[in-house]
Length: 275
Ligand SMILES: C[S@@+](CC[C@H](N)C(=O)[O-])C[C@H]1O[C@@H](n2cnc3c(N)ncnc32)[C@H](O)[C@@H]1O
View 1: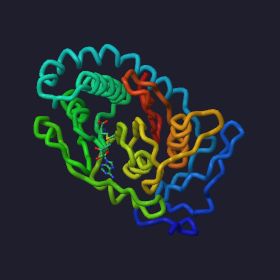
View 2: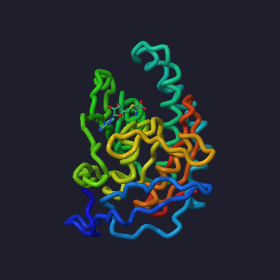
View 3: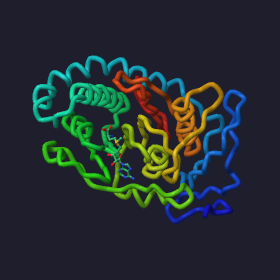
View 4: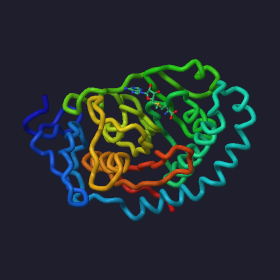
């Protein structure tokens, strides 16, 4: 059950009242109310919180710089991992995508001067491995450990299951104890997607999420379209609205990866340095 009144817990987080859910109209079409995020920092959401010019600049510069870095990562890591990677017809593509995403993240970390991360739903762990090898400090978490993790020398990969309950019963800070990170990262994190902003807010981190399959809170499928927008475009809007309600400034970036679900949403609670 959601709390009826807003109340503060011992961690200084505030439970939002169910009645605070708002109706949002996109291009004249009302979409269902967004389930409230129950635990958010005490500071109220910024009024008219929209993508910030400097955030957009930062993300754009990171993306531009990432092209050269992607090539450098490929030169450095491809020969070894092309051999060690489990045999799959998509090997080339999977490696190329991880080089592209890692390059973008590394440029972003450098511009923002923030190198610590936790990757949720890290899957085979290769992205966490690349970031760690390149000097970022962090770990990858996934509820399904992979045999492949053993090959990723030096990468901190752990089995951990994160909350998939409905948004009214999650204490995000229970799941982020000891994270001490600047970034919560999520690449195609499936059912975790709507929780990424809440997890980042709970540990005062920024986030980068690359949504793919469209899931809502509580493990329900997200199946809402806004006007003429595709289901995917509507979902990106929704994830940004969730981030907005948690107090984030945010910006988008289309990454150079093979998947058509290539949009990264970058969110931050405070201005990032850089550019
Ligand atoms: C589509 S895969 C993406 C894996 C990886 N990020 C990539 O892009 O290759 C989604 C991952 O999220 C993990 N996952 C889903 N729900 C989770 C949860 N509640 N807690 C931890 N991991 C979860 C799954 O085990 C899976 O490895």
